Amino acid sequence: MLRSYDKSKLVAGTDEAGRGCLAGPVTAAAIVLPKNFKNKVLNDSKVLSHHNKILLRQLFEDNAFDFAVTHISMEEIDRINILNASILAMQRSIKRLKNKPDCIIVDGNRFKPVGSIPHKCIIKGDAKFLSIAAASVLAKTHRDEYMEKIHQEFPMYNWIKNKGYPTREHRAAIEKYGISKYHRKSFKLLPDQLKIEF
Picture 1 (cartoon, one colour):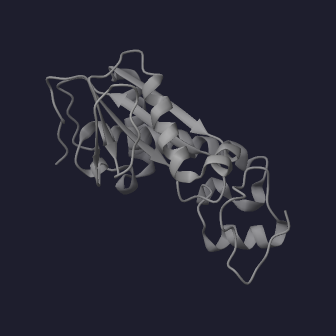
Picture 2 (cartoon, one colour):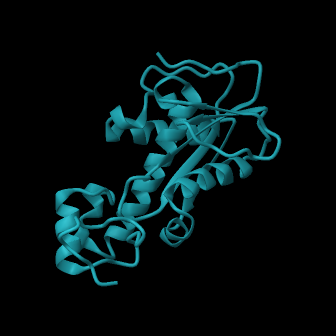
Picture 3 (cartoon, rainbow, N blue to C red):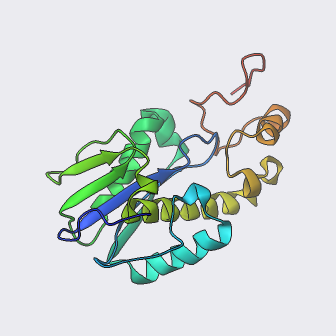
């Protein structure tokens, strides 16, 4: 059962989506939920149905005390690496909140401070705390929406289905068609025995 982190403080939960993808941005969200927020459906976005994620996104965008979402581009990922890009996406989302939170809770084990705001990293935080789970839903749905848009430009990679993750189908399309402007060139896009010409 998900719970609130600290009802006496303005707590921002943050999480990212798309870290393991071969194409597209890494996306993060930060959210401050109302103090007495409860929801029986909310969970880690990875275990929610598409339908429930869309309903929850609307609920959060209509009712959250504060939220922000940030995409970090493929070019920036290639320049600073995916770990730094994931942290940067979360930091930018927190900085875009209209209200400065009292503390930040982060899914995972790595983060860098945002000014003087205290933060706590929580392994599997999206399955423990409401605001991190809410951030995971926002990050995932906004990133999926981005991938569905760019699918129209490059339908051969079937991003509408795989969202840029390294599925067998996605890798077969890279082997056949080469890479697009949305692929992350710093990633291992194909197995060692197959080479891509950039």
